[in-house]
Image: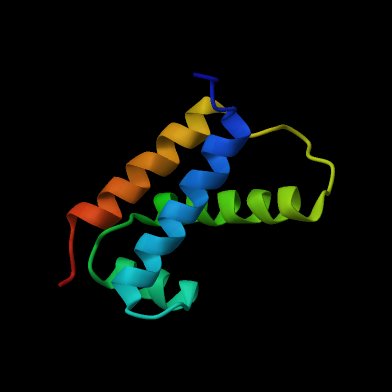
Length: 92
């Protein structure tokens, strides 16, 4: 089985966090998701800032804009931790 690249893991993790934010907001508006996650204490301000920076990096990758630095395994790991926080603190 082939190894999955860090870039693919990063992009998949961004999608996973996006889906969790949509679920938290009960809407496909990511800003509503961040607002609700803040209200429920699911993400700390530094977590939100990190996720937003990852969303921006993902957008640049999608647009084919040259990157200062590629995503790292540490970024993927932190995105996964944020996804877990959004999933464990279920608002339902």
